[in-house]
Length: 131
Image (cartoon, rainbow, N blue to C red; front, top):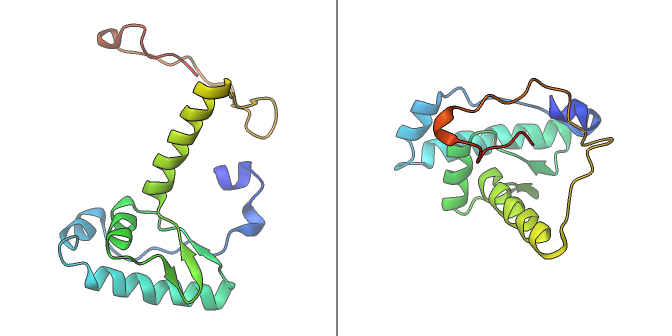
């Protein structure tokens, strides 16, 4: 996984599921109290056990529900919205590339493993490249 690849295993606390499928979580989107309550209960357990400072919900549905309901911190631990931060990071990288031709070094830590060439369906032509 990327956590091991980037040497962050020692910084990772608990990975814990909420016991819901994506379908079940989506059904709770309009009535999020139950989902938020379960998340807060689990987050508090993790904060206490691991002394967690940051919680990253692994589900985009949950992350969106938490953000929409202003749940951005629990007992002092920040809740990171993976959807919002991913969009902002992509915007930042685009702006850096555009303004100063920023590129990611692929020699060491962020190096890519050798993979088979990307197979692109004909309908996409040459607009997609192996990067």
